[in-house]
Image 1 (cartoon, rainbow, N blue to C red):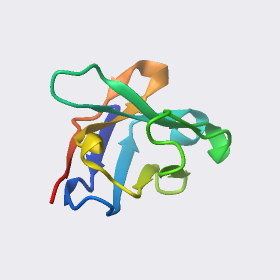
Image 2 (cartoon, rainbow, N blue to C red; image 1 turned 135 degrees about the horizontal axis):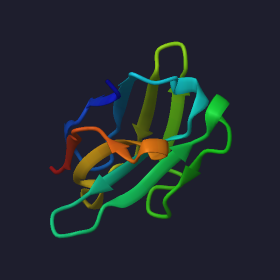
Image 3 (tube, one colour; image 1 turned 90 degrees about the horizontal axis):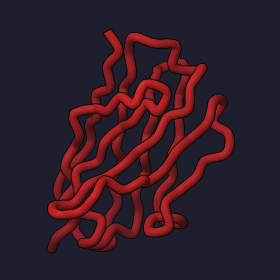
Length: 114
């Protein structure tokens, strides 16, 4: 069974950092591009970051570029999102994405608030 499970969300103060992790199972993880998206209430789901096989060519959404870093560990079947300089606009449910099958995880909530 192909599955994505996110973790690491929570409440963080503005200016803080948080690291999200996604564990993948049921497919040959190292063969595929992976991505992170997010969705805030009343807004469409937004691309956050993507990473190609072997960790190459990471790409970022305009609103997070320079603050977020995506990485992958093919030995552990994980794709992580390191988030820094968080602000209230980063509040959202963050989803791990397997583009090849248009598969989504259940999401993890991030709240940036003082």
